[in-house]
Length: 194
Ligand SMILES: [Zn+2]
Image (cartoon, rainbow, N blue to C red; front, side, top):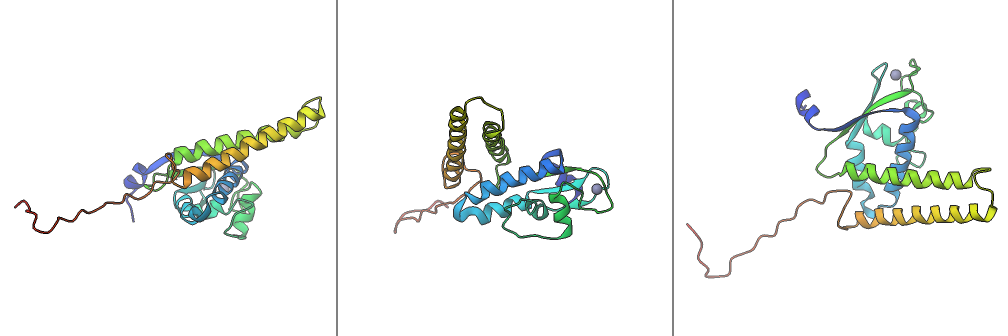
């Protein structure tokens, strides 16, 4: 069991968020995860272990696995009543009417939270453009609307492709690869220092 000070020093970010906003954030995380190929499992583990949440009113705590299970397309298939309430934007505690949670993100040697947040922001912005372009009355011309939709969709696809490239060993990986050390063996007859 870590001491409180050790846990506090391990905190990357504390963020207050509406539970509905938190669900939207998790939906995007799940979408990123789905593009990570055979590293999805490792990333999923890091994300679940890297955050916890608590109600700002009643203090009910939820772990990272429960938070990640909030996503509509979550692969963990969690269907507890706590998760179902969270998905509806309500506190996990059925006696509490609060709709905001405090989320704590922990530093992890295998996870770049800053890059994850950047990706989520970019993907959400592109999704918003897509929604706006498709909205009624947003633009006069039907053709122009369709063009913008296609352009936004393309931007989103490119971003998701980049996520995959980063994750597969590009220069800016979302997840820190463990260091690998190579041990050179001395040639036969070589002298060693004493
Ligand atoms: Zn509560």
